[in-house]
Length: 172
Image (cartoon, rainbow, N blue to C red):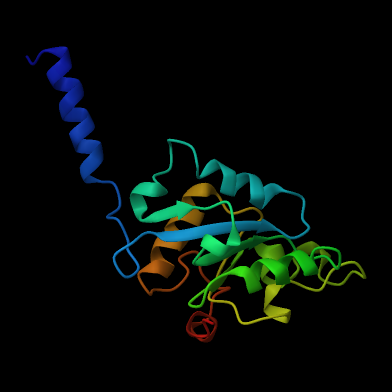
């Protein structure tokens, strides 16, 4: 029988070998800036959960940044209300060249429950070219992380049907 400290170390090493490999963009982490553009906050809360120790966001090759000027990808939640459209445009314009737009949740994709209301602009697909979409209402932190990793590797959005190959190819 092994001693407790050795058993704990072996358990830790076993967990580490199943962690995702770091994904790099030109030798560095992909920097993410998140913007809530008018929603119930469900998707935004799930994005915040990615910062906890339960989800290896940093270990998967991503880094959260506080300013759009430092970001590679803009993750947007919400159905893009008329009052948030200016903030979205400002964040997008502040990002450096090579930027990508990712819709997180059904509302960001096509407006979700609020797509036909006077207060919203109908989601990102009605406004701009989108690199990828992560469907769900709200998507779980695990599915968001999986989708980000697959998008970074050049694959499709994992949970599926919302991201067409055309929307993935249309990066700006």
